[in-house]
Image (tube, rainbow, N blue to C red; front, side):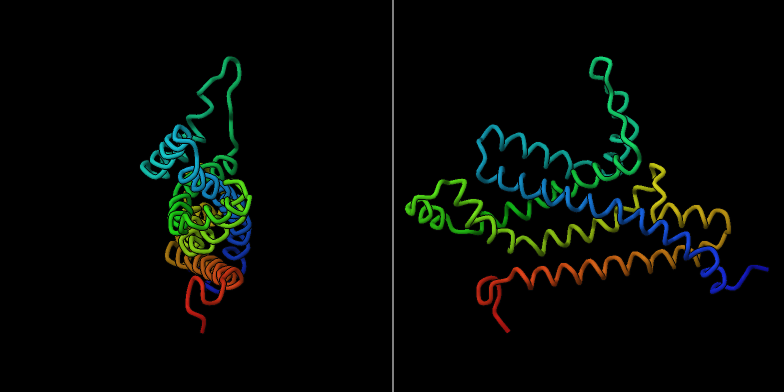
Length: 231
């Protein structure tokens, strides 16, 4: 006879999932930071970069938006070590491969939100800044980008929510995050319903906390009467 769920949760499931949760955080946080940095840089280059550089960045975005994330994860972990640069090759550990995969993919999507935000700002603001003696780079970084980022934040935040959920793909390259840990426990105990319903609650809590933090960030960065009507 199997042990009651609460006893199973307290004695075995919850401690293991907490370890998996911290591993998930170690994957999600740097992936989100990398994705945001790449997204901002790629978005700016796609709007204001040199035409040749724009084509390169557009190619990156098309590649990472157009191929399945699972294929990207497999490439960085399994295929990259076989690409040799003379006597040198790059071998990533599972967490490093997962962070790189998620960060590059997330950055491609976030660049679209940043690009849209930049294009929504009237060009007259740059001309006015140039008339005041600012360079184009100063005008973009100091005037246009902050406004564009505020407008793009809801979309970028939504991408971070997606990142939390598809971080579960790290389990396919042996990362024992939430999903990987839950799968191991389910295989060992055959208590699939309890295990996967519980891990679903963990993800729901993660997403809810992230959504709350993102709303707070939006409120902190908003300008009353500018992006949206004030209450």
